[in-house]
Image (cartoon, rainbow, N blue to C red; front, top):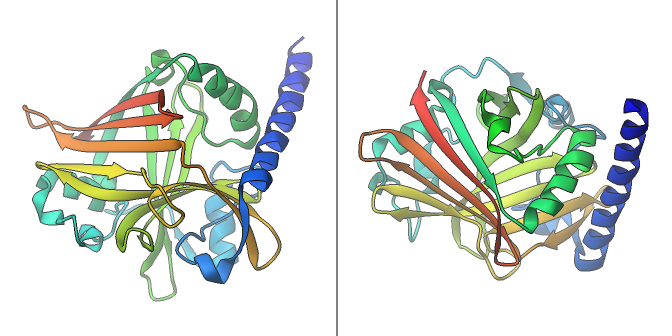
Length: 289
């Protein structure tokens, strides 16, 4: 019985993957890598997991540092400075989290919303499970035992950080929540540095460009953008050596609010919406280890 279920999952997952590829080809556009260097990022193999970090290091001639040290998602938070955002305006604890992420442990709570939870359930139970990537929690109990968090630094020959990997798994299920590559990048439509996060998928990736803003002493990261080149969600698929098929999915949006609450605890609200409807809400509490 279990074997039959496994076969069904693989069949449905394969059909789902081909459906997504068809959407990328239908709504996307072929672009030369040289013309969209701001969007180019690591592409994945057939299975993601933590293999993507080793594969990218080999492909780009980088060294892989899994000790994490005192590393963070952004080696220098001031790299996000620009018109509309002053890094000095946010709470120092927010800055410390981004520059020294390894110092923090996280608890997370999740909520999904009808009717989007149906599509999310299908994605997680088939494609995400097959490729070992983006296994979103479908129930608050999925995160009851917490999530693991590992910072992986991919360094150039001069020891500078090219990418910061953030590898997170659901502790209870031993499944990969996020295999992500973090960096700062000037988006042409924004005219200033943004947070860029790349999630490898087979021969492609999902790239989220997030515009930084300040809300009092809180950090806002928002992917709302109207035009190609703005902040937004981009689904990318490999198309030969020098071309990529890129679909700017304007209807899919992410919003983060990273803040310190009234009793000094660092927290983050992460919301995902599609077609204006809520899909997933995650709340993180970050505490020093």
